Length: 210
Ligand SMILES: [Zn+2]
Image 1 (cartoon, rainbow, N blue to C red):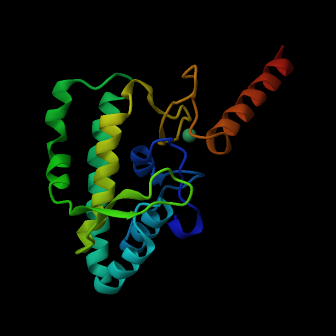
Image 2 (cartoon, rainbow, N blue to C red):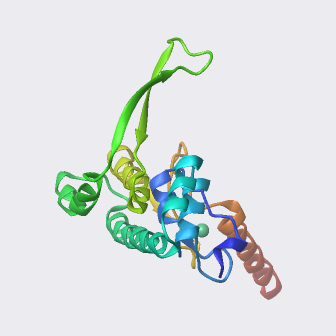
């Protein structure tokens, strides 16, 4: 199904997992929001990961084929990282997990971040604030904010509460930040209601038979 017909899903409560959820089956058919270069640019903008002027500059300088190639790299990064998360969700990460993150560290090495002292936002205590910027030299630089999200997920999220939605055909993942860690569904709108309807039908059937 064409990703242009349906908005991307941001329900994970952890941006690194939202990236894994950039391919999903929200209704019947699989939708991949980063299936081509234009899709990747749109998803990065909707996720708020790349400033609009930087996206416009990359779009103006790169050919569609170059952008499609970066989208393909993003998809292989996504599927490699999905394997890492699926194998470890439900338990805290341990030191030996670091070995398997070598490909991500190699990607992070290519990042061209730089800091900037900028005027502080109105209402803040100090006059200046430290801002992180990034050089967007090549289409590949679009992978850098994604790599940063994945690294932050690994460093800051407790994998004990990284979960896969219980919907039978759902592939969405999320970080369960609820107080009792009782979250089961990607979202009520996608799978929660589906489960409620199924349970209701089952009860009706039992009443009829009983
Ligand atoms: Zn779901």
